[in-house]
Amino acid sequence: MESWGGYEPQVGEIRALRTFRIGPGGGLHPLFSDPPWCDGLNTARCLRAEGPGGAPRGHAAPDPDCTCGFYAYGSEGAAEEQQHARHVLATVACWGHVIAGTRGIRAEQARIEALWLSGAVPEPLVRLVRARYPSVAVYRDRAAMVADHPPTELDCYELSPTERPSRTRLWLWPVAAAAVVLGVLPTRWLGAAGGAGTVWLAAIGFFLVAAMVIGRRRSSGRAAQRDVFVCLAVVMWLVAPFAGPPGLILLRLPLVEVAFLGLVHWARTARAARQFPADIA
Image (tube, rainbow, N blue to C red):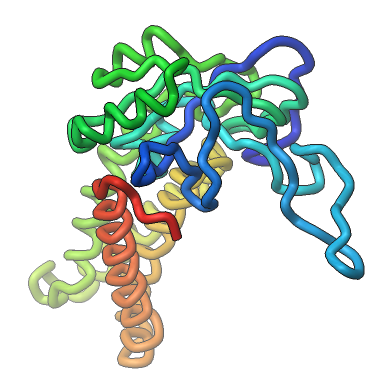
């Protein structure tokens, strides 16, 4: 089953979570498009075109063979994969044609039911949001909002509990960091060369097994994909010395570049998520 498709509830409203950017006038904008959501009913439509002259695709959103529709997450843990959700999180009621997957839903119609704004959002902007969305319950306490407007639990969700990913990271990231440090230590620091080789091979085997286990248990979701990538990156890091100078150049140097670029991207995204009002690209 795909992350956002494969199962179609037929009756009633479904509550889910999503985040927004806050515009200069207090409008709540999707992260990757400009038009703000309205207070009350919002109806999705497909913006893609096909054929000569850009003829409309001719289907209602969401469509199983397209990416259109309003996206929302099934759990807080899934929603937090977006940096903006750490400052702006909304409960949205979705109905009409709804396609649900393992991490969330795509919906035809939706309305913002409740909204949490962190302390980083200045109070004057909060007042603008309240004025623009009078039917929305605005909270400054996130736990209270989720308790009062809990997301609907669907059988198809695989990441509804947030504890599983966090528990994995409690051991994965420290162990991965230790393995990276181990990979740059001189072999003489670990005893005889044979002993060091045994430690290296054991670490390589451990992360290969971890990658397979994590991939099978949480095959859907960006968090699982990220954890698998970390495990495989550590394997490449530890294998590189066995290939001599070419291994260091062809394996370790790209890993350092990817890590640096990833850190820069994370820092820029986190900084943008704390800026209010958000710039609308």
